[in-house]
Each structure stands twice: as C-alpha cells, then as structure tokens.
Amino acid sequence: MTFNYKYKPKTTKEIVGQDKALKELKEKISEYSSRKVRKALLIYGPSGTGKTSTIHALANELDLEIIEVNASDVRNTEGLESKVLPAIQQMSLFGKGKLILIDEIDGLSGTEDRGGVSTIVKFIDISPFPIILTANDPWEQKFNDIRKNSIMIEYKAITALEQAVRLKSICEKEGIEFDEDAISHLARVSQGDLRAAINDLENISGNNRKITRKDVEETSDREREETIINALLKVFKTTSPEIAINAYDKVEEDIDKIFLWLDENLPKEYTKAEDLAKAYENLSLADVYFGRIRRWQYYRFYVYIYNLLSVGVAISKTEKNPNFISYKPTDRILRIWMANQKNAKRKAIAEKISGKTHTSRKEAIKNMPYLRIIFKNSDKKFVEKNMEHFKLEKEELDWLVK
Image 1 (cartoon, rainbow, N blue to C red):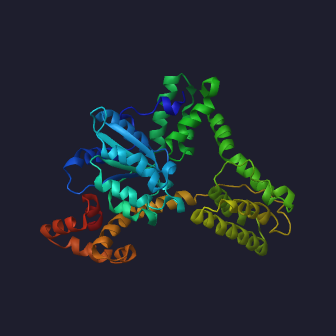
Image 2: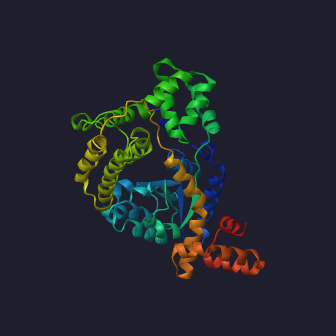
Image 3: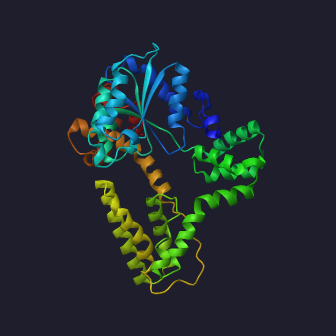
C-alpha cells in the first residue's frame, strides 16, 4: 500500500493548508438545498493540494454517497450523460444524500468533447444534489459557461512548512529516520505539491527507512532533471542529426515541458544571433504543429514536433558551444500561475458583469474602475441591490470596493 493511499485524508481535519477554502466549501454544501439558484462548486488550484481528497473526506464525514467521474476519461456529452445522469435522476440505493464529483475538467479538450461543457451546465441546472467540479486552471475561455454557473473556491499551493509537518508525521508513523534539513528540503522542492512530496518520501526512504539531505538532492534532482538534461546535451552539443534524433526517446517530461526547457536554455547555449534565430524558428514551427494537435487531434504531427525539437534545433548552429552551460528549468509556469491567481477574482467579477450588461469580459474589465468608484461611494441599499443583480459574492464585493 503506497504512502499516498495509506495516509489519504479520512476527514477534512486531515486536509493540509486549506482551512479557508474548506470552511467555504462546507458552508456552500450545507446551503445547497435552500438556494433558489443552483450553482456548482468549482474547486481550483495546483496539483497535489487536496482538491479531490477533500470531497472524499467530506462525503465520509457527512455520510454521503459520492458519485465520481473523471472528465479526462469521459470527455464528451455521451460519456458524461451515461455516468452522471443516472446518478442525478435516482435516489441513493442506501437512502443517503449524494455528492456528484466531476474531477479534472481540464481534461475536456479538443474536438472529442463537443457538448461536454454545455452538458455539465445542464447537470448543474437539474441536479437535486450538489455538483462539485475540480480543475487546475479554470480560466480558459471554453469554461466561461461553467464559471458563470459555479461558485469558485481556490485551493492554494501548500506551504513548505505545512508540508514538512505532514512529512515528519508520516516518518514517525513509518519508523523512518530523518534529518530535519532533509524534510525541509523535500518540502521546498515539491513546489506546493504534497502528493508529489509524499511519493518522493516513500521512494527515497526505500528499504533503509532513512532519509538525509544528500538522499533528497541526489534522488529527487536525478529523477526530475537528469533525463531532460541528458537530452538537452545531445541536442545542444552536437550538429549530427543521427545523434540528436533520439534525444527525447527516454524523456518522461510532457512535450510542453520540453518546449519550456528549450526556451529557457537556448539563449545560454547558442551565442550567435543567427544560430539562435534558426533554433527559435524550428521551436516555433514545432509549436504550430503542437497547436494543430490540440485543436484537431492530429496526433501524427508528434513525429514532426520531436524532429524539430531535436534535429531542427541541433543543426540550427554552425558549431557547438565548447563552454559548460548549467541548464535550469523554467520558472515561467510558476509566474503564469501567480499571475492567474492575481487576476482570478477580477476575471470572475468581469464574467458576471459582462453577462448582465451584454458586453465582453474585456470590456467589463476595462470599465471596472468606474464600477469600483460607484460602489465605493453609494449607499448600502444601492450596493445590496446591485450585488443581487450581478450575483456578486461578499468576497467579490470586498475586492471591488477596496
């Protein structure tokens, strides 16, 4: 039995680092049957922060039957209806209430899921039971209608200190000898993903039931970066197509991560402007093919992408750089995530305003400063009336007037 399964939270008290979100989630579920307008609960945040575990723990606490569907598995209207519709239309066999969990709605993508979003919106409207959705990034345009029909609850990345407390607790229960510094370092390198940290703890401690800072550095870094760095060496340090062509064969990184590794390290490796320009031309052409795969599911284009990212980049230079270059992973994903969270509330408010004023979200954001002034300088009756009109939550109003 893996550590993640063994120490999966049984109650919400065991969920780490999400006290504020948990409080709101419990309140909204308890209010569900009395609400005139039915809305789903959309829990969003980085991987490994406890989104799905929370729903299972909550169902266990409240003695509710949980009906779980992973959107990545069903993808389209037919799949969703076959899994979810019977659960909505029938009472529980055990006389319990229900929670309907549609997990990882990010998996609704491409041409195969036509109607998937509208089907979920239909479920929200007709379901007598709370519908809970989870997502890593709910801000894509395709989720506009889902956001309009959902109460959004953010799960934040778990802090290193909170992770360290949990990891030490597991070590003590499993009889694993540990250095304080090793646990602190393991918590930091997991970047807010507690599930990944627990997996690493289990793998690194192994049969020795011991973990040191050196173990974490050697094992964790090797698992995450060694393969991609070796691949980059094959591409950057050769002009031979025969060597470069197989560079990514053993790389387990997602293709979009390979793009980011190349983008981050190309300027360090290719010092001649013309070499760098040719390399980025191949990188951009690979991205064009990747876009066609995302839009049309033309998976045969993967062979072109890998050829461009390996041979295309390798032969872009006239000669290899003889200097040692320390390759680093990009921090762009973290920057994008932080920017998304910074603008998340503004986007959610703009969605509600645009729906009522029949304007685009862009126009609503543009005019938001004027709305802030109006709300800030108006009496309580006016504010309450417009809160109801725009369907604003108290937290959204607080953000708007502050």
